[in-house]
Structures are given as C-alpha cells and as structure tokens.
Length: 398
Image 1: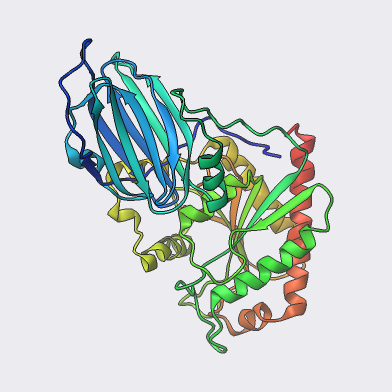
Image 2 (image 1 turned 60 degrees about the vertical axis):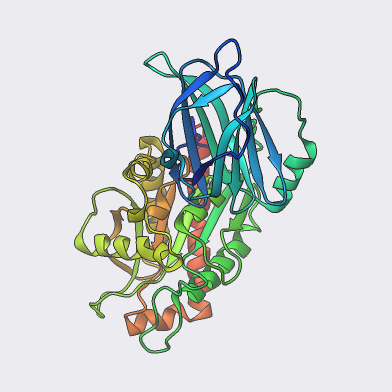
C-alpha cells in the first residue's frame, strides 16, 4: 500500500550518442519535424532523456533483446542538436538516432542492464515547443523479457504504467548499508565489517516483520553485494515501499561516543558529526566508479530537488517513533534525532530514515553489535516502532 505518492518521477542520467548509421533520405512533404535540443541526466538506476521538437511528435516505443534496447519510432525528423548532448552514460552504453526513410526516424537506446520506461510522453513547453520525455529505470531480466514478449509493433504511443491500487499491505524496505567491495567501517577490536553487521540486523528485523499481519518486508540486498545509493532508492520505489530504513554502524574519531542515532534528510546538517557521516556515506559509490561530482550539474540539481515536504514530515515522525521505542531500552546518543544530506534518503515519496545502530569505534558498542541477544532486542524494538508508525498513518487516513 503506497501511502504517499508524489506526482511524476524525477530521475537523472546521461547517455552516449552517435547518429544512426542509416541512409539519409530527402525531406518528405510535409517537411520533417525538427528536434532542436536534447539532454540527459541520471545514473545507473534511473535515467531521464528529454528531446525538444518544434511540433508535436507522434511516437511509439518498443523493446528489443540481445542486447537490451529501447527503440523510439518517430515521424520524419531532422536532428538539429549537437551529438554530445546525448553522449552515452548512466543506464545506457550507446544512443543512436537518425532517418529511417522519408516518413520515419528512430532513436535507439542500448542499455547496460534490463530497463523499462516508467514514463514516455509528450509535454507542451512554455515556448510553444513540444518535449518528448523518457524516464528509464532498471528492472529485472524477467520483466524485460515480458515486455519484449507482450509488446505489439503496431504504431502507438507507449502506455503509461498503471498506478497500483491500495491493497492494504504496508511495505517496509530494510536497507543493509554497504556490501560487496564497500565493506563500510571496521570494528576496532574484532575487525568485523560494517556490511556484515547491517545484513545480520536486516535479516533479524525482516524475520520479525514477516510475522506481523498487514506488513510486507523486503531487503534491498540479501547477500554480500554492492549496490549504488541510487539503486537502493530505486529498489524501494519499485517495491512501492511505505517506509525505508537504512541500517549502519559507523566509526568516529572520538572513541568515547556511543549509542544509536536516527537520521533524516536535510540539505543542511544538524551538526558537524552528522555532516561528516553523510559525506562519508555518500562517497560509497566511488568504490564502484560512480560519483555524483562526476555528473553534469543538472543531475545534482535533480537529486537535491527530490525531497518533498510531506514525505519529509512523515520521515521525521518515523524517526521519533524509533527513538520513542529505543528510549530507556537501549543506549542512545545525545540528541538522538539528527539530520544531514544522506543520498540514500532521497526517495521523493517514501518516508526514510538512516539508523546508526551504534559505533564500531567504541569497544562497548562493538561488543553489543556482535551480541545476538542485543541484536534481537533492538530488532524487536524497531519492529515495534514500525507498527506504531503504521497505526498512526492509518489513523490519519493514509
């Protein structure tokens, strides 16, 4: 049950472009459309492509396998934007475009992984032009195969995905921080990796949530694999999660600091410690060669704009519920609710928190983080806070 759904999908990515190696025919009569501008933004989880036309284009979308491609068929079109405006990156390894014959043109998007379009529509721009907007999102191989198998090659606009109906199920996404090449922090005494602690806690929480009626739970990762921050958010959105909880166990230079902390998103950090933690967590993607600072400026703007006031209010409520459950039961850091610019909390329509279970830099916290009895206790308290949040959401007409 999606309690909060904001209109539209804000994504970003980039792509490499090369003109299609197709014979160029003489302009048809009437004259072809002019595609005079194009841009692309996003990452390897989501990508948005925008092409501006002087007149409204009819179009159709098809999926082709081996390799995975998205094909956009257009009427006769003259492409008047620079090739570098659609350079391959993000979800796509190659973009080609060009004339098919005197009455048609085509854009071919070759993907790095199975993809699907979550949005394919023409919008009227303020200047009287028309904008073709394509939002691509990573998907499973099975979903892509189904799209290829079920599609019709008759010329018709791509259908928009139907908005799911309220099924009464409250979906909780548990995100075990780090994974794969990104081990996260390391224990001072035991040298245990943060990625292993977060996965153990995530499994413990999931086991308890599965026993609760009306609640469905999934883990963004169920084994030792690397996921980019954007992939974690996208997986939660694809599952139509009503809550997103990212689990961590960091280290600090001050070894005497200990206790749990709950973070919510803000572009302005609550304190220096929160700011430093957010910077460190946001650098996780660099281990796989994915870095926000390597993206064009418009991508950063899109990511920073994702937060919506209503979702943020629910995130704060969730954080307060977690702290209320922990209070007097387990150790909490001073000012236990803090905030900073964590990229993993930027889902536009899912209340999200980052839970620091404790600090591996503190010997006492490290012992607790490895203690199964303490882990079970914390997991039960976290489930209690989720149930309370769910009940409040329903009572408010969610």
